Image 1 (cartoon, rainbow, N blue to C red):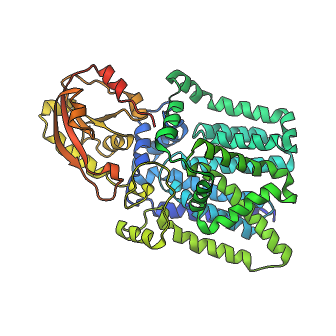
Image 2 (spheres, one colour):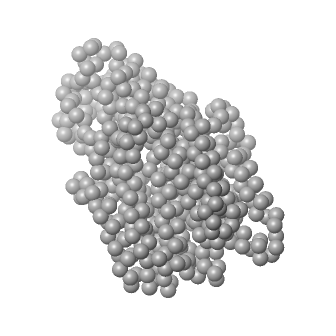
Image 3 (cartoon, rainbow, N blue to C red):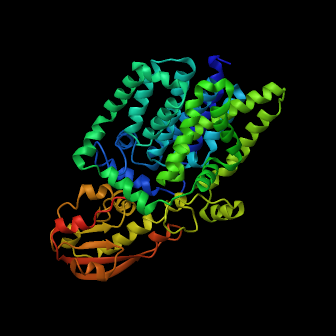
Length: 506
């Protein structure tokens, strides 16, 4: 079981994951957040309102090495997804799982709908899943084998993970709670956990300094998102959402993993990881966190569940359940792909959703469309750029040179900056990091093309307001459809006052 050759099947599964996402990378074009990340990579900094800097720096590097093509942008999340599949199998191997258990666990991570989404388009989330999975593997090696020096590796991964997404801090919190509630608290008597913590803090320090210097914008962002945007779920709804995100037919595996980490006698030393899940589940429910916030723990649970199920089969002399489970995971995993990724023509995919009858968990208060948000947010961007280009071409040359587009959200602004580069005026917005980047030079009489809003509202800020166009899109989110476009001239208030009023962090 401990032979290096046992890792070959995991390597093949990881390569299959990479090849699958590279082969399907085009889909329906750019996702909303991808456009924003590309825009952020044109403004390198040690921090952003809604995320730390590491994923942006990696994207900047990928764009310089490869190109600005969609294929180049999506290489890194595909690699992170492949590495997460391999690491999940490695955890099952560390827990005593044989090849079938390793394959079952790895396939769980391969086909979990939430991870299919994260591996398809660029964001910090794919790297976050990989960080949690590596942290779980390191924690198991520390707890089972008392390898104190591995705390430094854990600190390294945690520090890099915090530079990618704050949720790594939740894993560390949960592990800390688990240690304190079990005999493994003796680990804290050693200097190594504290040295690992100092290493993580040192790696996170540049972003922390940016937060302090910028007035803690991310805290403001998280508070507003929790209060205004996120749907608050009760404990039962939150748990059901985990089942949907991880694939309903895979739920028995990871639920078994929870109970095994909490109660399996042979894994008494791993009890802190089971308690970590309980603590994080309670924390996210109380905080009103989105359902997918807890998803990065699924690879650990897939591994623990697969190893436990296999051990039970071996003990009873059952040979068929594990091969059947692996085959079933492969078949039903493939059936879940259209629920997460754009692989068919849009009408075919809508029909597939209707036939299956599964809907994504509700996470935000925005109105739903014919497609779930993770698919609908691929639409509307080219229509937006074309509409604004038509408006801009009707302006006199002098006005067109100095015009700006005021967008309602970072998706609209980034679509104009990325897809409309060279075709539309520059975009400004009060949403998240666009507000920090500021309006630039904007004279009082420069024309402002405004997305959304109303003539009455704009009349408080501008002397002349005229509705000139409407942005329409067929499959986009409802709030992106039938958006009025106004042309405003003659700003009445100072630019500083205007900018202070449009700030929206959420």
